[in-house]
Structures are given as structure tokens and as C-alpha cells.
Image 1 (cartoon, rainbow, N blue to C red):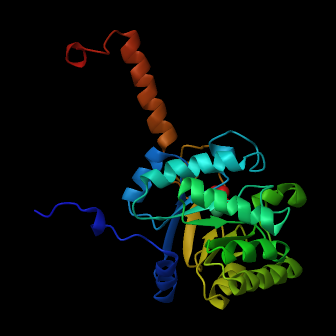
Image 2 (cartoon, protein in one colour):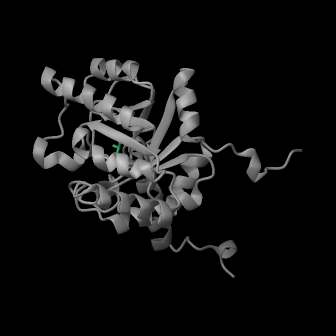
Length: 273
Ligand code: KIV
């Protein structure tokens, strides 16, 4: 019987993601924010784990992603990195920590990389953050782009509806995608845009394009873990497929636990010292 060895696990790199796109293999990506869930997700074989600033919503209970701080993102990322043996870990730079100047962006990226041990960072936006992207890349930190619905700009958009339906916005998105590739981003997330536009971007770009609500013709898919596992029941966009009903399973288990305590059934003879 062969024993499990650390060196048996092949770590996913940005280079491997590029090879996956080149050979037409779809890339899997899911968010995680804590050690225990990251361990399960990594062990299941996920290619990329995103420590998303969606932690602001699903972990901290905020309405938007704007309030989460850099320290809080580093806390989540540090817990995730400790659990991960195989996946590439990408961490969102939160709102207000890269828009001010490229120097601020670099300092934020370096803090994330140094303090959490993550492998790359993600920033929202196109031409307006070009200098920040270039500065971070110049320090040797891999950058993932994010275009389309960019939740950090929710107060500019006013709604979480599909982006880039109009020609002008679609053209700007294509220009920004090409720019981010030219800058040296290793991959790009496209959120909530028409499937045809996402297909066009993915076929024009050499780097992997990961979609969320961007249809099937991109190089990979990403979802928020609480949504796809059915922990968060209220959020029901059309693009979301639920793979479990953890809300139901957890509620059932917790109610059974409460009943057992009340009925003096827990702990029993075998469960005491
Ligand atoms: O923060 C996040 O979870 C994200 C995904 C929705 C792509 O950016």
C-alpha cells in the first residue's frame, strides 16, 4: 500500500492555469474564508481558492463588500493558506486599499503576500487601476483582474444587475480585458455579463477567463461557497446552481442536538468520562 506523501500533491500554479486554458481544460474556482472549509475544498480538488471580499457579506453580514478591511482580509487569507496543499490561493485587495495610488496598492499586495502566505491578489477594474496593477506585478506578485459587475463599485452602478449589455460598456470591457492581459495579469474574472460577450473576451484573450454569471464559454467558473452549498438561502440569482442544502442539513442537525439535550439523551453513558 502506498503511503500519502506531501510531495505527491501537485500544487497549482499560474503557469498550470495557463496550460489548462491552452489544452481546453476548464478551471474550477470557489471562495473560502476559513481553515476548516478551505481544507475540505482543497482536499476535494479545487484548482483555485478565492479569499473574496465577499467575506464582507457572507462572513461579516455586511450589505456590501465595501466595509471589509485589509487586516480582516489578511486574517481570512492566513486561515485559508494554512489549510491549502494544492490550490492556488487568490486574495481580494479590499475597497480603499489600492485605488488611492499605485504605492498604496503595492503596500497592500505586499502585506497580503507576506502576512498570509497567499499566492496572488485580485483587483477590480480596468484602465483606471492600470498603474496599481503594473506596480504590483513589478514586485513579482501575480495579479488576477476582475471586470463586469465589480461589487466594490455598487454605489456607482446602483444595482447588482447584469453589466455591459450596452455596446459602449461592452467595448470598454473588451478594451480593459486586453489591457489587463497586456499589463501581465495571469487571469481575469468576468462577473454577471452577457454570455456572448464573455465568450468573445475569452476567445480574444490568451490568459484564462473565469466567469461568474458569464455563461459557459469561458475558461473556468467561480462561485461563492455559501451560495453553492445552500448555506445562504436568500441569494437566488439565475446563474447560481446549488449543489447542497447545507442550510437544511445544519438546521436539522442543530434541532436534533437541542432535542437530545432537552430530553437528557445527550450525553449518554458512552459519551462521558
Ligand atoms: O469576492 C468574491 O467572492 C468575488 C467573486 C464573486 C468572484 O470576487
